Image (cartoon, rainbow, N blue to C red; front, top):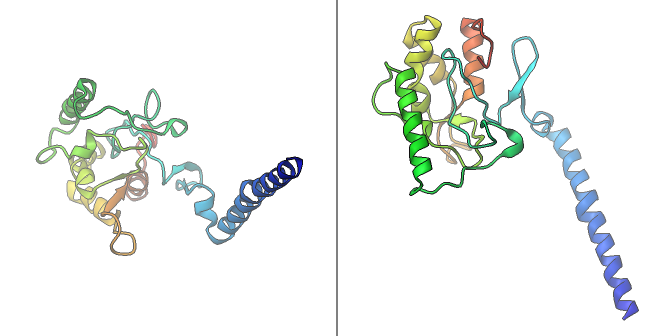
Length: 200
C-alpha cells in the first residue's frame, strides 16, 4: 500500500510540474516570441501612443460621435472584462424582452435617420458580453448619427466603415465584421477627435 501511495504521489507531482508549470511557461514563451502583440493582449494605441483598450474586448461608447458596440451583460454596467458572461436570460424571459424593447426605443431616438429596421445584434448581447465586433450592417446602420454628430457627409463615414470591414478568417471562417474600437479610432485619425474624448 505504501509503495502504491508513493508511486501515486510521484506521478501527481510530475504531472503537476509538467502540465501546471513547465507546459504553460513554454507555451507563453513561444507566444511572446512568435506573436508578441497577441500574447500581450492585443492592446490598441491611439495616435499619441497611449493604450485605449484591447481589440479583443468591447467597450462602451456613449458619445453620438462614435459607433456603439453590442449591448453588454458583463458586470453591473456592462463591458467589464473581469465579469465576462451573458445574461443567462432565455427567449421566454420578460426581463430580456423588456430590456431589448427599451434598447430598441433608445436606438430609434438616438438614430432617427437610420435606414430600415434595427439590426438584431444592436439589441442582443453576446455570450461573453464583450464581443468587440459588429456586422457591417450593424455599423452602417449607425452611420447617419455619427455623420450628423461630427458634421460630416454620411458618405465619408460610410467609407470609413467599409474600409474597416474584416473579411472571413482564411477566406472561409466566420463572417465579415467590423471591430468597433478600431473603427472609432479610424474616425479620429481621419476627421479628428471630438472634444468630449474617445469614450465620450
